[in-house]
Image 1 (cartoon, rainbow, N blue to C red):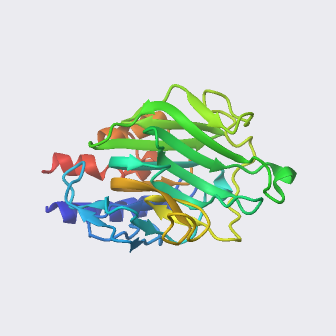
Image 2: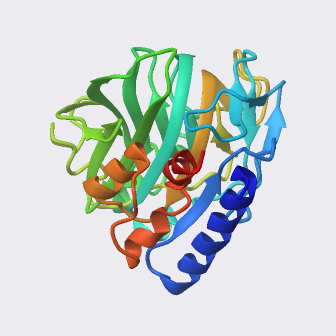
Image 3: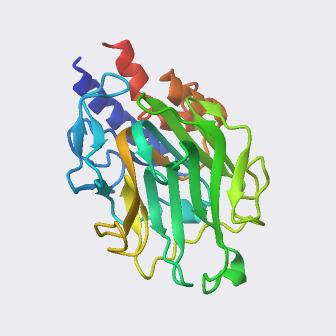
Length: 295
């Protein structure tokens, strides 16, 4: 069976698995193998912007990865919270090979507008110091009615992500505890700003137990390769983009629940799926391992 045919088959099987496990959903998955940014699970198809393209340099022998090495290029996705607002948990998984990153690579309804306006969303990837980075706008109940307080959490892990080589990165939030992973290994400690934020050094209480703010009445950015800000501010080319990622991305997946450490390790290793219940949802993200065994 050709690799492309095998991957198409596995995508179909994974979609059937999703319909059988309603509370544990792989919401979106982008393989980029068709030289497009189509979502193979959901309806969140991406639009390439500012020269974004595709590369045959991949972590697993698949057809293509997303090429964001053309400066301030990015992929714009439909504005959605991927069901995270309802579940108050998430898993974001991707392969990355990068040169530099100003803030992150995968962004969900992020708006960093200052001056007491909307502040919303999630950004995940690497920060300017090459450390794993997660930016979260955490709501805080009645105190967040106008979203004018210090509700954001900029979380930096203790792991340095190497440049110029493929690595697997993941961020998992469940029960108000955040864990970031590099090649399947969890970070040991985290730093957070602003000072006094409700979060422990081990990553717990990252949202204060109140979930997320996805209010974007003034507009926000969802996509790959940039973080969010007001439109056409500073070096932004538009679409609320700013703080860019330069490199390749592959096999980006978003779940609306928290995967276990073992499941993240399996994705990073391209290993077999342990059991068909909730773990069957790892099928699409583990395609790389299956393809490797069929090369």
